[in-house]
Image (cartoon, rainbow, N blue to C red; front, side, top):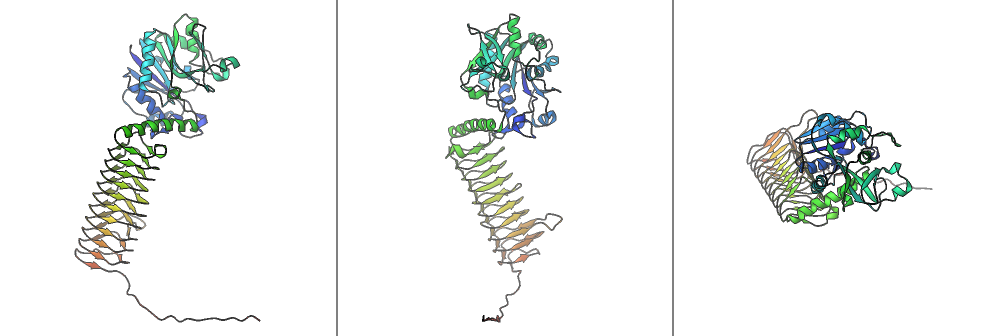
Length: 459
């Protein structure tokens, strides 16, 4: 295989997405679709990777990174041929194969691109297009072949005659060209079409007219070259990628009870013998250990869960959960939280930016915010750390083995020592020394009720 340069076309607006976000940044399984394309081409180890940007180019630049990626501006979006013209200055005088593909084809595989390049070089073509047969070719350019099977031209849907529209072999939008010959070919393209754009597809017709050899590399899987132009097509790509991710996890020893209703990011890691129940979503670079039980209906985002963790109907964001911890049901673990070994956080409890040390329990209906709990602390139902005074957040510290009664308010900043017992219904505003009993509530007073009975008579 010759030297390779890659050009990824990412300048279009993507109007059918109906979005303020550039089309190529819409995510598929937690990763922008252009990132999937770049990952595939990086596997080819090319000399250069050029990304042609245009619509909201700065936003695209800010969200894409990687070794060897260079950005080239297409100030006016005048078609795919015009986009490739912008790269000429960077490859002037260079001899090799140029792989051109669109940033909205997230399902394309590195192996397929490698096979295309091998075919292109083996046939000694001046240009080769990747093609597929599609039973529903609407919207795609058609591959028009001669009676001998040679590619004569590619005709876009909007410019095709009824006979051409009946052709089922379609253009994937992925090409190989030879440099430096391609640059002279591009200069011959004319915007003589309905959209008044410079179509890259016209390059093959021009090369044929010059007696150059062109070809098409036909693959079987039409789904691999799906171009995402709408939210519906985005959902199709998501479904395909999600199935691949779940398949890989199941092969590695993870049980996915219902793959149709489980959503896991490509960057997530899950250990062997963990079971993921239906309705579970795992986002970002989350890590889940071995032997865990996650779900049903649990959301985990950018968090670390140790081994043997149970999380049922829980929301866990930006947090760390230690081995053997039990979370849920209906529990909210917010960013900055560290839950250590064998901690229990139960139903309708919320924890934010807090540390719960080994063996502690917050079983139900409590809010623990900006707090540090020692080992084996028991927090009763309805307990609240009152961390905000209207201006600043303050911290609550509770020592080892302390018992916090139900419906206690801990007004921060406050420190509770070790082995402390706080009576139910107390509002604590002062520090409590270790081995103390604290009761902070008004004495109960019982008084007799005077009952007045009013009787009315109607005439």
